[in-house]
Length: 111
Image (cartoon, rainbow, N blue to C red; front, side, top):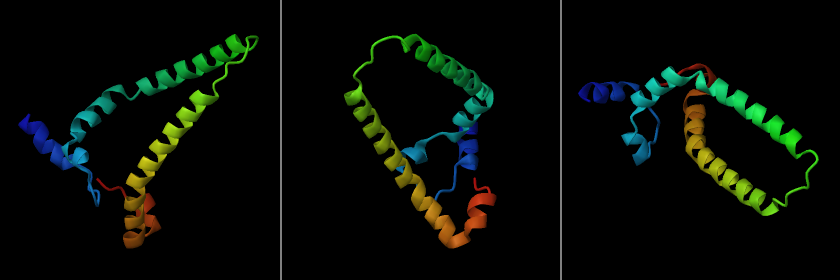
C-alpha cells in the first residue's frame, strides 16, 4: 500500500484547484485498470452499434412508444451533467489560456 501511496503522488494531476474527492482519488489504480482493459472499449462500442441497428430493425413495424417524459428527464440529466463538467474544466482552461496561451493549452502535456 505504501508503494501505491508514493506512486499516487507522482501521477496526481497538477490542477489549479482540486475538489476534496479528487484529492483522495487514487490515480494509479485507474491508470493500471485502463492499461489492462483499454481494448474493452472497442468491444463495447461494437456491441452498442449492433444493438442499435438490431433494435431499429426490430421496431420498424411496431407501434411508436410515447417517450416524451422519459426524453425530457434524460435530456435534463444530460444538461446537468454537461454543466457540471463545464464548471470543472472551464476554470482550468481559462487559467491555462490566460497564463500560458493557446499553444501551451493544446501542445504541452501537464501531469
